[in-house]
Length: 296
Image (cartoon, rainbow, N blue to C red; front, side, top):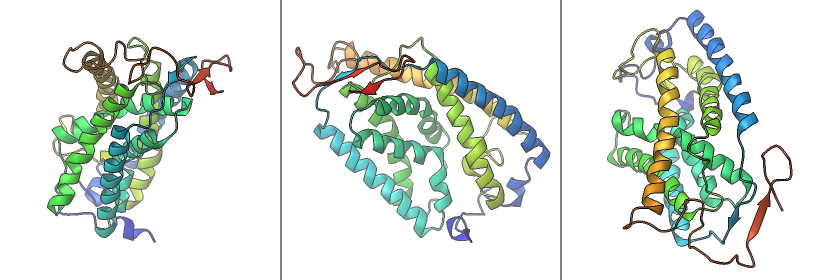
């Protein structure tokens, strides 16, 4: 019934689709790995959620700036064209790839009104920057048969890095936790694992499409083998928080310290800098007692 969503997947590309990829690992091994990883997923989500905290007071000015609108329009066009190409090529299933989900989250961040939810999603999505890095290091454009489709691949993943940097430049609700705080990283990695093992894997198995390499290892995977998913669990568990913290550190340097690009004294400040609060400025106050904020 859903063949229209994946019957255009290119079977001539090694380990892209088909029985060979679907049976790369035995069903028994998949079940054992999923149960094993699920223990970590639940632990990460529970441990992280109990410790994550949003700022008790977040001030902001009107953030409906031109740059934000431009990025919203560009990302909307890029993601819309990506979806259009997927429908015309009958590869809609690829929309489920994590980078498309992250791009959709960035559209929300660009369009939504300031709220504690925006801050939470912003902090979580910073831990998914491994997607653009891996996309550039190991590009997978063989299935994209026309130049425009291939160009969108690089444009989209480039925007995934530009947008969070620009939002940090705006500040306000687009803020980060202290670099020493690992609770958001642990919580986000739990979400990342849950999406791969609980959502992508059950869809990839019956369709035999190697979504996010959950069925079989990539040709260029240095950890190729029967235990490649366990190795991925380890090295991505190190890479995701490392990239997040490195991105935040570099952004802080260029936005607050480097003389040629400095725009504000601290990363928490809003841009443009105001000495006094505007009349239309709002305040988020911690009223729940558990570190989570609500809008007043």
